[in-house]
Figure 1 (tube, rainbow, N blue to C red):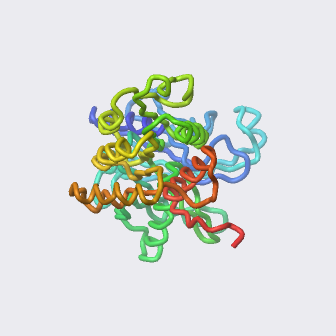
Figure 2 (cartoon, helix red, strand yellow; figure 1 turned 90 degrees about the horizontal axis):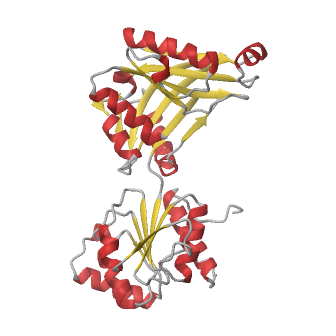
Figure 3 (cartoon, rainbow, N blue to C red; figure 1 turned 45 degrees about the horizontal axis):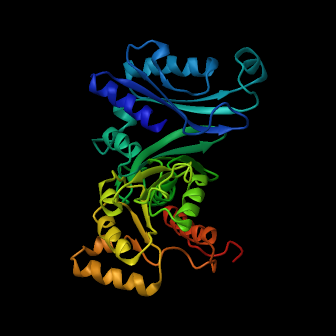
Length: 360
């Protein structure tokens, strides 16, 4: 959805057409949409051409009418829509809740410090470096006011300001924590809300090898909603029936591994049948932009391969992406337990977790 939404924004921009962005920035009670839901309408377009949804019904129709006005005047609109029983009965929407919808023209919604962020947003949704938008909302006597918006890149750089250094620092930290999720989240306090809209592609895991551990990793990764790819040269192991939830690439493993189109949100796990093949796969993997490269094996084997990579002149920046031996020390020994260890480490890295027991 993100990819198509931002792509449709880019189409309007390329055609020289202004568009309005309407976003649900806060909800309370039962509502037909969640915070972060977005609708886009181009200048002069019929209502049926709108992309995305705010939940339908007269609320969405009113927001679209507001968007048409914003397209002409600029500025912004921040309005609460109370979904009363009468409104629910007439429109089919669930009742009892309230949605706050922010409407802005594209030149305000997507510009930060004079920089048009749309190309980065399109790139992030397609697999490039992720980015997050942060909207600061003041709360007073049940009313919301727009206090500012910033953008935060994955490297921590901030575009724009929320009005004071403390707010900027807090919002940046919250955005960096949310970026790995690629979803929207609201951070609430007594006096204000922060809506964090993280834009990132679906995580992808590429597994070199098709043995028992690779099979367990692929199965568990699919349960975690990874896009799973398995690279294997042996026909009996490169069987789609063996990996029903994965893309199978059969061929020379190192060469195939090096030829894959990786994104910022890509993870590689090397679990082949031998030391030499592992080493060749590591040489291929470090030439990619994958953010994580895990190597299955003994500590002795991983030390030897790391020494080989340094001797080959691999930059330290890429060596830091290597996790060898791969996984967290959970004490397990079976293929499923090893897979759990590997994916636990990847999850910890994705979400900047500490790995400590939650009971401590």
